[in-house]
Image 1 (tube, rainbow, N blue to C red):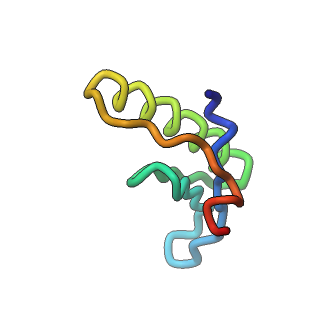
Image 2 (cartoon, rainbow, N blue to C red):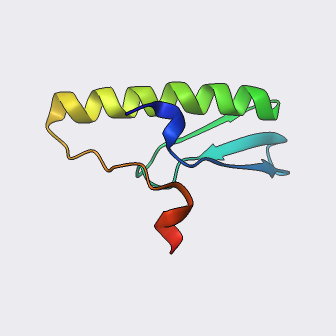
Length: 71
């Protein structure tokens, strides 16, 4: 399972003037950056940390569904 297999939604937050990258399949997994690229890179790191922590804590890791999660 790879970090990049999880769907990421990137959007502009005009209040803080940053891009937000949300990973809806992993509760609480969110990152931000000054550019889309930076937000995506930070989200990849956040997913890796989320997965590592879940493994260490014995939390079930959801299989990446991507767009299928909305079907």
